[in-house]
Image (cartoon, rainbow over all chains, first blue to last red):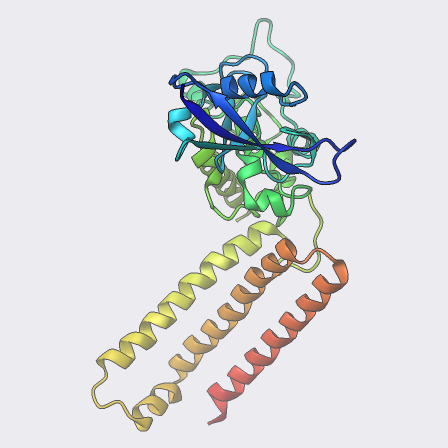
Length: 236
Length: 115
């Protein structure tokens, strides 16, 4: 019998006047479970517990949450990585409105993603088969396209906490650069013009929480630096 | 595109570039002053006043004062837009900061050319 002390953020706006932490004793039988498995075991004790999950293998990005103070995907985070002193505290992603328990309203996050127009734009007539890229041009998209929009980065970013309506955030900016760097995209000038104000890109202070938490090992700070370089090259 | 009218250059890009250029100028000026204090033998009022009597030092110092003013405004403007959410308090604070920077700059110029 090996019992893990789990502390869960609970909030049901229909019945609770304020959020509170609820304590659970979860029997892990000594296994190094994933955090998501621990949530399932806790839900067996209280089936009112709400959280998002889908693929349970780090592909869908549904179960981003704050585990012992650090954002990550519950499904691919083993207890051995986060638990300290046999205690696990789970909270929703910081900075976004809580709908219920560990479920947050991702509206602002998606709004910023939509703003950078995350799709190829090209006015030239389409070739008969496809728009070709050289292997070197394709290589530029590595480290950018892999983002699964779990929001772990943007919700760990203080600049996004203070101005989520104006600062695009690391996830959105990684995708902005993904399309700026794409040889097939023709809207580079228009995209840059949308980003040169003091908030959209330049509110990034290089704190690099985004890099520290990204479950896919991506580097939004580097992409933001590249966007700055492109803006500078275009405007000087 | 997010619209702003109170930041220094009306553009995030120009603010960002200005912040870096002014930082380099301030670093050079600070290093020079520290170096002068460390390596001038028999430092007294005459040596200190003689340094600032030279035109190149006044130009260098004025450049540093202007850089400091711009640097402070870009930085503090950012702080006010991060942490002061009520519009009245934010604009009021920004006006006080701008006024203080202006007074310090003019005061600095009179000190440089006054004595």
